[in-house]
Amino acid sequence: MSETAYKVHPSSYIDDEVVIGAGTYIWHFCHVLSGTKIGKDCSLGQNVMAGPDVSIGNGCKIQNNVSLYKGVQLEDDVFCGPSCVFTNVVTPRANVNRKSEFALTVVRKGASIGANATIVCGCELGEYCFIAAGAVVTRDVPDYALMAGVPARRIGWVSKSGDILDKSLICPRTGEKYEEVEGLLRPLS
Image 1 (cartoon, rainbow, N blue to C red):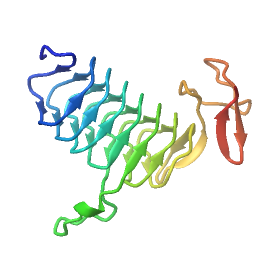
Image 2 (spheres, rainbow, N blue to C red; image 1 turned 45 degrees about the horizontal axis):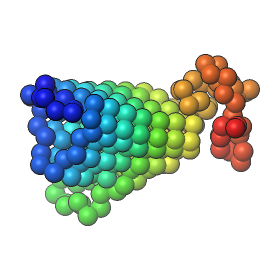
Image 3 (tube, helix red, strand yellow; image 1 turned 90 degrees about the horizontal axis):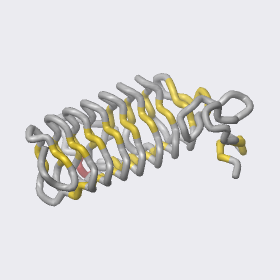
Image 4 (cartoon, rainbow, N blue to C red; image 1 turned 30 degrees about the horizontal axis):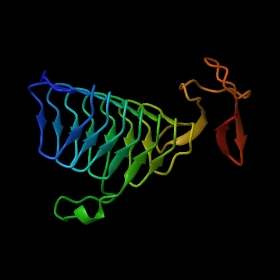
């Protein structure tokens, strides 16, 4: 590892014009492309590619074999499970240049994406939502939604701590209470 405020394994490549926050670890065989900003206290697992011009908030955990292409923005405390997939063009063709069509994909604070899930570009994943392993997200996801399937559909709600909520809408781990209003979930003060 290098001797800086962040740590980069010697097998990884960090291009010019990259910002990396203190306490961040970048593990084996990663490539961070120019214009990418990584917050503090993040972890990029083996074989992660980020960029160009990707934004990763503070406290994010990106597991092995994840590629974050241009257009992906992760807010703070996002978890990307092993081999989850982000796309950046809706209708790709090898023989058609569609770089002008890269779509913005925003993953809000505290969201979790399970292993091998696919996030189709142009979607917004709400705060603290939970995408099940293998799900394929093709549309926006509300805050606290538990999404599963192909295509992904909401099958329940989760708390900030990631615990599945039953009909009481009380987190079994923390006791935090929630309410559903017009098909959306929000914490009670």
